[in-house]
Image 1 (tube, rainbow, N blue to C red):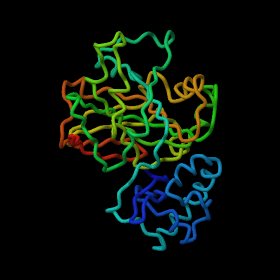
Image 2: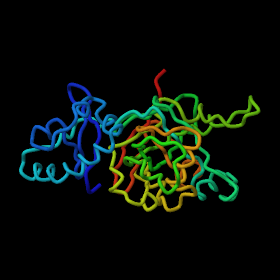
Image 3: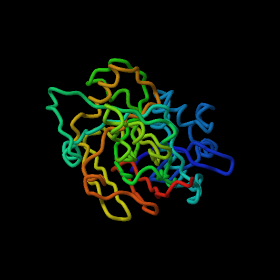
Image 4: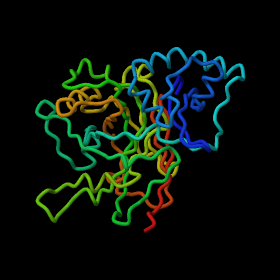
Length: 312
């Protein structure tokens, strides 16, 4: 990440919003006290990042104005980063996470999924819930019901402008920024044999801690082409997924346009845009307690999360 971003960290007094520069967090309130342009009072609250997203037109103007000032204040020693021991929290907790399934052809192949031609199809989307959200350094809890816990690095688009029936051409105008998401999946819980409905995305995707998000949000103008971004996921230091968003079947634009034909997209919604090849199921290996995942996206940052068996 080379430019400015924004996120949330945990101070002794609770959650606090921060601006991010060169992958270091600076307390937003301290930045203002140091001489950075003033902000709306609600941006300084624990839910300040959500407030910025909900007022994105003004927030992005502030970020562009503040970036050179923050750089100068840091260089002058007037502004110091938060302690390296501080927990980096999720930027905010979205209420709706829309997820794209089988959106890379090679991933569909490794999963044994037969896809119709794009011209005869449309995106396949499902929901993850707010209980799944954790941040950088937080622990992924492995439920005792699964023996096939898996990983999925994905580019996440953060909606910053309300819209219904958004055109493909206008779709990126509704994106405030981008972040990293790891769509943790219990593969053996994704299928059912006791009903005529063969898939159970809720059971397989929506356990607590199944969506590490962060470590912060990068404004959309810093990623002008979301179809030219590199993704990577390592397990215990070994690269498992390495690909580029250029290989998506349905682009970020197309996913947003499709979703908006069903629901009105709201500021704060997240669109998780699908994962490339290299997941555990395709390799015949799965996560176990003690494993460490590093999920990273070029130009944004990386998440580090350990897996631990859930204590009953």
